[in-house]
Length: 592
Image (cartoon, rainbow, N blue to C red):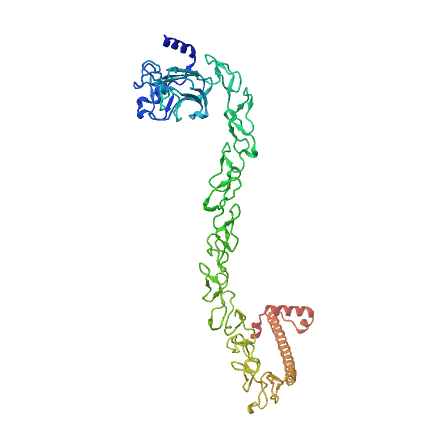
């Protein structure tokens, strides 16, 4: 009779609510013998006809445990009305003599959004039942929302209440969770929408809002999340949005990007991979051991690697220093060393060479990178490796500290200490030989001898002129060539090489007059001969014309007397003769 009333009561209590736990995922802590026969899913398989623990419809946990823990995942947050538990009876009368009553006592039921019961809501905690009063089928109303329904029992106290078993165990044959499988609705049929627009979960019976949609708050969920919060219940803090602005109340996304040192849409991830700053666009410096710098301003919190300095460890050691904290000085022969290990990788100071710049220049070289050649040092010695100074003076022909200057004109020998001969034009810088010749009047390698007799001038290369008594060793001046005793006749002083100009001028006048007279005589003779020949030709031509005329008249039988001819016009006669002369060749006239 009792069980019939219980079944009718449960049927009326459940109404139109749906068992939302049926066939859902279930788990328990420490299953009995790790056997699948007693798996946690047995409590949500819908089978409850056989409450015997060993017949495969119940969940059994391991023995000798002080905590029993079982939960079912409803897959999403749902509106719950009530929860019913069917405990193991082994199908024998459920009374104080049934040993399983002691194991059921002290249990708790939680509803949570995680598998952690302490993050959820306690629906029921048994503090009143005894072995005589605890029911085998227990129902509790729990009109709240959640994704996980958790059964919990423990035996943690040193002394447990009377009637409690020594160990905590799960012996659940069925757990039913009744409610609406869709959020945002309430009522017996889960058909009435929650009255508030932004209400996510309302009371399954009254419709009172019990939880707002993501991003909203307030008694009626009329307010968006504020104070840099967002999400479900406004319980999540916004990330590090730029200028600490409010993020999107639902998604948490920062509208204007992230503040310095943060990234992602929610700006809740710090810069990494050795980056920092706005949008993590800056690169960390040389932080010690490659550590990440401070994500906001790039400061190396653990210090810098060797060779770097400054808060950001981006500045190399100053010239001349290297190592950790730039505390070590470079070799003084280096032209600035490697900032990390001190190697002279930037070259050596003038005068030094080698990997560590410990070797002075040699091979007659000096200066920067040992690239400059020494001068003409005495004995071909090495000059000073830094400045090129010749320690032992200069070779012949050179002077100065570095022996790169040739001797000035007029000097020669080592360090140009000797003076060229006074009669040299200029001497050899090394030997002093007058290789550019001697001054006029001198000869010899060093121009130390005057000219031989009969010679004078530069290098004594000119011969004396027509001096008097030259055969008696009279000589000319060795420099100017002037004859000391005068010139032979016809030559003029001082060198007696030029003819006497006065005598030469008189002779020239005599010859000029003589040639003029001869020329005049020859010209008169020529004129005379010319006229003589011309006159002879004229008389000869006249005789020939008269003869021809007589011959012509005779051939015509005309005899004219002299008087007749005489009476002719003289001009006519001259014309006739002229014509005859032109028509008669010269050769014919000669033959007459």
